[in-house]
Amino acid sequence: MSDRHSGSVVFFRHLPKTAGTSLTTTLANIYGDGQCYRFRDVGEGFEGMFSSVLQARGDVLSLVSGHIPLHTVPEGNCGTEFAILREPIARVLSLRRFLEQQPPADRARMGLGDKITVADMLASRKPEVYGQVRNGMARFFSRDRRFADPASDEFWEPLPPAGVVEECAAALERQTVGTVEDMPGALRMLQRRLRVPYELDIGMENFTVERNDEVSLADIRALIEANSIDLALFHMVMKRLPKGLLPASYAMGDGYDRRTLFDPQPGTHYSPMQIPGRQGFELFEPRGKLCWLGDAGRGRISLAPSTQPMTLSVLLYGVVPHYPMAEIGFTVDGQRWATQHIQGEGNHTFRLAPIPPHAGPLELAIVQPYAVPVAAVTPGTPDRRRLGIALLNIRCEAA
Image (cartoon, rainbow, N blue to C red; front, side):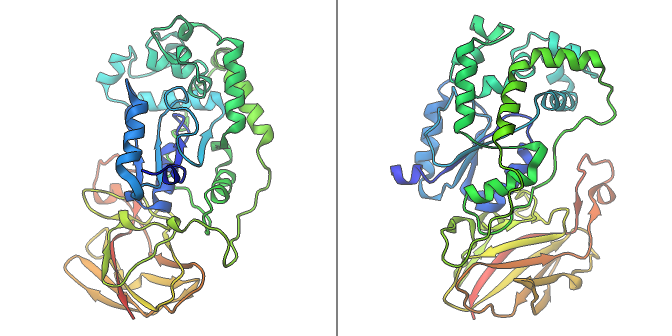
């Protein structure tokens, strides 16, 4: 793989418990799932594995992501790099909720019971818990491997050395960062940084928040003491974040990234994972080869400029057998668009009237009549989504 391409790959360095599932959905929609790669495990020899993936995926890779600390893969391996931060106390409390939702065997391995208290987490000597609840952000953005290595004495020190803190602060100064607390602002920042010519939606809001759990004043004081470095770093970053950033607008001819637009070619079928420029869709589901419209009920696909007219045929699926598919609406740049509705066996094809040549991006929107809770279709499911219609594929034909 050329250095030029390596420099064009976007790197989402995912600090745990910072709405990563939601943001990963948004990013997969931007570039298309097939152009994204998420690393699941970070272990021995990971830096070599990271480089190998960039080499092997070659020209089809636009974005990589994962829980990848700075000491594991230093800065400079990709092009644009960014991270999302979260107020440290809220992040630890989110971790508590997450751990309580894990299988009993996993909790037992970590020495945790069904109900996990703040005291339980702070008393834990299991590295995967200890390293997260005691300045986990500083450990993540530090180049010092000892601070993140349980085999090192430095890992177990109450506070990191001053040099580590200064280094971590410098790394965060160089990072493009947003926060969970201002996710709309983070999305506007990303839109500009990634040169995306449309506004971004957050995906499914899986923020793992505290609900009705009791957290005492003593708990908060203990968390503040254990995470004083993270708190200082977080508020340092907050001070330099831009305020009141408006959505970016890209006039015709501006330098937007064409990888973030859908450029259909005549005679070609496209599955959801091959379609970039999506917003308002859930994650692509490999088994069903489809992606659902999200809670907003309006899926947007931004089309690349085209010198030729085109006809698109959109294949959709309804969540229940008698879903009113005939009431689905389509718009192109906000204008109602004529379609021919063809009913198949379970699936429905909507053949759009020809879309004329266009010098700039166009927005194709699919609007569903309503959504139903998944639990109403499959009782007892843990899936909390509301679903209506799903996109199966799009076929492009010359007009």
